[in-house]
Length: 182
Image (cartoon, rainbow, N blue to C red; front, side, top):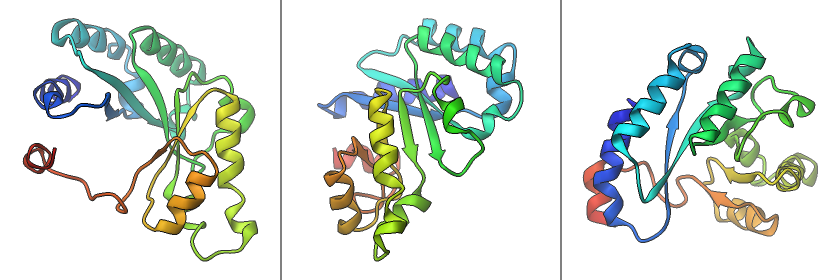
Protein backbone atom coordinates (compact mmCIF):
# COMPACT_ATOMS: atom_id res chain seq x y z
CA UNK A 1 0.00 0.00 0.00
CA UNK A 2 2.83 2.43 0.86
CA UNK A 3 4.73 1.57 -2.33
CA UNK A 4 1.60 1.95 -4.45
CA UNK A 5 0.76 5.30 -2.83
CA UNK A 6 4.25 6.68 -3.51
CA UNK A 7 4.18 5.46 -7.11
CA UNK A 8 0.76 7.04 -7.68
CA UNK A 9 1.81 10.30 -6.08
CA UNK A 10 4.97 10.40 -8.20
CA UNK A 11 2.74 10.33 -11.27
CA UNK A 12 0.43 13.09 -9.95
CA UNK A 13 2.93 15.54 -8.43
CA UNK A 14 3.57 17.40 -11.68
CA UNK A 15 -0.04 18.66 -11.68
CA UNK A 16 0.69 20.90 -8.68
CA UNK A 17 2.85 23.94 -8.03
CA UNK A 18 2.77 23.96 -4.24
CA UNK A 19 4.63 21.66 -1.88
CA UNK A 20 2.69 18.43 -1.52
CA UNK A 21 2.24 15.99 1.32
CA UNK A 22 1.39 12.35 0.78
CA UNK A 23 -0.43 11.37 3.93
CA UNK A 24 -0.81 7.65 4.59
CA UNK A 25 -2.82 6.13 7.43
CA UNK A 26 -0.79 3.55 9.32
CA UNK A 27 -2.50 0.90 11.44
CA UNK A 28 -1.37 -0.25 14.85
CA UNK A 29 -0.71 -3.68 13.32
CA UNK A 30 1.76 -2.16 10.84
CA UNK A 31 3.45 0.04 13.41
CA UNK A 32 4.06 -2.84 15.82
CA UNK A 33 5.22 -5.28 13.13
CA UNK A 34 8.98 -5.87 13.64
CA UNK A 35 9.49 -5.86 9.83
CA UNK A 36 7.62 -2.60 9.20
CA UNK A 37 10.55 -0.20 9.58
CA UNK A 38 12.79 -2.25 7.26
CA UNK A 39 9.97 -2.46 4.70
CA UNK A 40 9.50 1.31 4.75
CA UNK A 41 13.25 1.87 4.37
CA UNK A 42 13.29 -0.50 1.39
CA UNK A 43 10.31 1.19 -0.27
CA UNK A 44 11.75 4.69 0.14
CA UNK A 45 15.13 3.52 -1.16
CA UNK A 46 13.60 1.96 -4.27
CA UNK A 47 10.82 4.46 -5.05
CA UNK A 48 12.88 7.59 -4.27
CA UNK A 49 9.98 9.95 -3.60
CA UNK A 50 10.91 13.49 -4.69
CA UNK A 51 8.98 16.73 -4.83
CA UNK A 52 6.69 15.80 -1.96
CA UNK A 53 6.78 14.99 1.70
CA UNK A 54 5.59 11.67 3.17
CA UNK A 55 3.53 11.79 6.31
CA UNK A 56 2.24 8.83 8.30
CA UNK A 57 -1.03 9.37 10.13
CA UNK A 58 -1.48 7.48 13.37
CA UNK A 59 -4.22 7.58 15.99
CA UNK A 60 -3.99 7.76 19.74
CA UNK A 61 -5.00 4.09 19.94
CA UNK A 62 -1.50 3.18 18.69
CA UNK A 63 -0.19 3.96 22.16
CA UNK A 64 -2.40 1.63 24.16
CA UNK A 65 0.09 -1.22 24.03
CA UNK A 66 3.88 -1.29 23.80
CA UNK A 67 4.24 2.48 24.05
CA UNK A 68 8.04 2.52 24.20
CA UNK A 69 8.36 0.35 21.09
CA UNK A 70 5.91 2.52 19.11
CA UNK A 71 7.67 5.73 20.12
CA UNK A 72 11.03 4.24 19.10
CA UNK A 73 9.63 3.29 15.68
CA UNK A 74 8.21 6.80 15.23
CA UNK A 75 11.60 8.37 15.92
CA UNK A 76 13.22 6.02 13.39
CA UNK A 77 10.57 6.91 10.79
CA UNK A 78 11.32 10.58 11.38
CA UNK A 79 15.01 9.82 10.78
CA UNK A 80 13.93 8.56 7.34
CA UNK A 81 12.36 11.97 6.64
CA UNK A 82 8.78 10.88 7.28
CA UNK A 83 6.66 13.30 9.28
CA UNK A 84 4.20 12.00 11.85
CA UNK A 85 0.63 13.24 12.19
CA UNK A 86 -1.55 12.39 15.17
CA UNK A 87 -4.99 11.87 13.60
CA UNK A 88 -8.42 12.29 15.22
CA UNK A 89 -6.86 13.98 18.23
CA UNK A 90 -9.11 14.20 21.26
CA UNK A 91 -11.06 11.00 20.68
CA UNK A 92 -8.47 8.56 21.99
CA UNK A 93 -6.56 7.70 25.10
CA UNK A 94 -3.37 9.75 25.08
CA UNK A 95 -2.89 12.09 28.01
CA UNK A 96 -1.35 15.51 27.49
CA UNK A 97 1.68 14.58 29.56
CA UNK A 98 2.23 11.55 27.35
CA UNK A 99 1.84 13.56 24.14
CA UNK A 100 4.94 15.59 24.84
CA UNK A 101 7.01 12.40 24.39
CA UNK A 102 5.58 11.47 20.99
CA UNK A 103 7.59 12.82 18.03
CA UNK A 104 4.69 14.34 16.11
CA UNK A 105 4.91 17.06 13.50
CA UNK A 106 1.18 17.54 12.95
CA UNK A 107 -1.83 17.32 15.24
CA UNK A 108 -5.15 16.78 13.49
CA UNK A 109 -8.05 18.01 15.64
CA UNK A 110 -10.98 15.64 15.32
CA UNK A 111 -14.14 16.82 13.55
CA UNK A 112 -16.17 16.33 16.74
CA UNK A 113 -14.36 19.36 18.23
CA UNK A 114 -14.71 21.39 15.03
CA UNK A 115 -18.46 20.70 15.02
CA UNK A 116 -18.69 22.45 18.41
CA UNK A 117 -17.65 25.73 16.80
CA UNK A 118 -20.88 26.20 14.86
CA UNK A 119 -23.85 27.61 16.74
CA UNK A 120 -22.61 26.64 20.19
CA UNK A 121 -21.76 28.56 23.33
CA UNK A 122 -18.33 30.03 23.96
CA UNK A 123 -17.73 27.29 26.52
CA UNK A 124 -18.26 24.51 23.98
CA UNK A 125 -15.98 26.27 21.47
CA UNK A 126 -13.19 26.77 23.96
CA UNK A 127 -11.49 23.40 23.42
CA UNK A 128 -10.16 24.19 19.95
CA UNK A 129 -8.20 27.40 20.55
CA UNK A 130 -6.14 26.01 23.47
CA UNK A 131 -5.33 22.86 21.46
CA UNK A 132 -4.00 25.04 18.65
CA UNK A 133 -2.00 27.20 21.04
CA UNK A 134 -0.56 24.21 22.91
CA UNK A 135 0.46 22.54 19.65
CA UNK A 136 2.18 25.68 18.45
CA UNK A 137 4.12 25.92 21.72
CA UNK A 138 5.35 22.38 20.99
CA UNK A 139 6.22 23.52 17.44
CA UNK A 140 3.59 21.18 16.02
CA UNK A 141 1.40 22.20 13.04
CA UNK A 142 -2.37 21.88 13.39
CA UNK A 143 -4.94 20.61 10.91
CA UNK A 144 -8.63 21.07 11.66
CA UNK A 145 -10.57 18.09 10.30
CA UNK A 146 -14.15 18.23 9.06
CA UNK A 147 -14.50 21.95 8.40
CA UNK A 148 -17.90 22.43 6.79
CA UNK A 149 -18.98 26.01 7.47
CA UNK A 150 -17.62 29.50 6.92
CA UNK A 151 -18.15 30.16 10.64
CA UNK A 152 -15.79 27.29 11.50
CA UNK A 153 -13.26 28.54 8.94
CA UNK A 154 -13.24 32.08 10.38
CA UNK A 155 -12.94 30.81 13.94
CA UNK A 156 -9.98 28.62 12.98
CA UNK A 157 -8.34 31.46 11.03
CA UNK A 158 -8.82 33.78 14.02
CA UNK A 159 -7.04 31.22 16.21
CA UNK A 160 -4.12 30.64 13.80
CA UNK A 161 -4.92 27.08 12.75
CA UNK A 162 -2.26 26.08 10.22
CA UNK A 163 -4.34 23.96 7.84
CA UNK A 164 -8.01 23.33 7.18
CA UNK A 165 -9.51 20.11 5.82
CA UNK A 166 -13.12 19.41 5.02
CA UNK A 167 -16.12 19.51 2.74
CA UNK A 168 -16.17 23.33 2.83
CA UNK A 169 -13.35 23.14 0.27
CA UNK A 170 -13.98 19.86 -1.49
CA UNK A 171 -15.11 16.29 -1.10
CA UNK A 172 -12.49 13.55 -1.63
CA UNK A 173 -11.51 13.37 -5.30
CA UNK A 174 -10.65 10.45 -7.55
CA UNK A 175 -7.35 10.42 -9.45
CA UNK A 176 -9.21 11.44 -12.60
CA UNK A 177 -10.88 14.37 -10.84
CA UNK A 178 -7.54 15.51 -9.41
CA UNK A 179 -5.84 15.56 -12.82
CA UNK A 180 -8.78 17.44 -14.37
CA UNK A 181 -9.13 19.95 -11.49
CA UNK A 182 -5.49 20.84 -11.02
